[in-house]
Image (cartoon, rainbow, N blue to C red):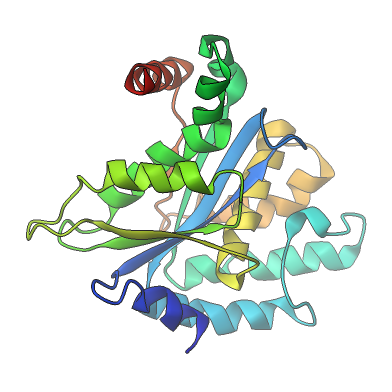
Amino acid sequence: MSIVENIFETPHDAPPEWALMLTAYIDESSHETGTVVLGGFIGNKEQWETFLPQWRKGLGKRTRLHTKELRWNKPATKSLLTRLAPIPFDCGLRPIYASVTDSDYSDLLENDLEKWVHKTYIVAALPMMLLAINSIPADETIKFVFDQQLQYENMVKIMHLFLQKHKTPSGEAKLTSIEYVFQSPLTEPGDYLAYAITQVCRNMNSRKADLCAPIALQLMMPHVSPIVCKPTREEIRYVVECGKNYIK
């Protein structure tokens, strides 16, 4: 069974019509604080099956893409990123990303439990998943596949319980499941997208931002409708306050 077939065959009793492949770029080595950009692409089985061979061809001699491991002073890096950038868009995959900075709300957290529940990754993930659920047809379902982040999996799975209240008109849960995978090529375009947005936001004149520009420019194409989750400071603080009340 292929990677794509495996994604869309589980859970067996209610296979999803759509899948969102997500990864995150965390702008701090601690993975605890700072700015988190979650990025990914939504597509159906046909779109992901079209994407995979084209992506592998675009990688050339590489077996995988991980932007943090690229050699940014090499001409081959620019060629690689330029070649890969349009592939997910040409295959009909829809980009989605969220960005949250912990300094917008960290002063509200009063104890270790609140800090654990409201890590920046988690605060970014929940509204992003809600947007994704609301962006597919009302009568269809979706599965979320995250690039492996062991320290966040339990909290994201708890959020799955909260998201179960979103139903199709026939009463099915719109979110069929949440899964974490290790080094899947299906999450690699999300890695590229999240990293590019981070570099542009950090310093749009930097070399890394310049080399990542091909995918950032794709977001501005007239036929592309990115799903963007950039809550304001006030919105983030409201969500965190609601979360604090919930866990009391």
